[in-house]
Length: 96
Image (tube, rainbow, N blue to C red):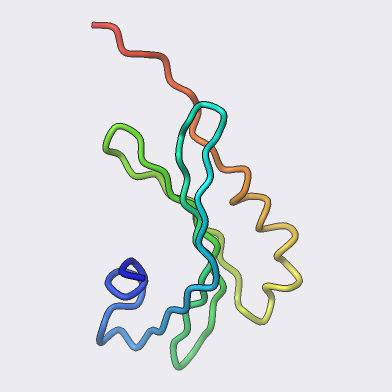
């Protein structure tokens, strides 16, 4: 949970992050993706996040969908497929 504790809800931020699920998947090209579902709350709001991360050639790519926790059940069927379908476009090998 280092990402949640150090970046998303660091000490002193008045945020609390709770990891609900974490998975990895590989697409047909062998590209690895990490998916995290988590809730972030402060004294004023609570948000449900679903994020996907991929690294290619030392570049981090991310996609994060967010909804108020009170709306997540209504919007989950629309938002979850966005994260599940995220993929990096295959690239051609560099020729110099």
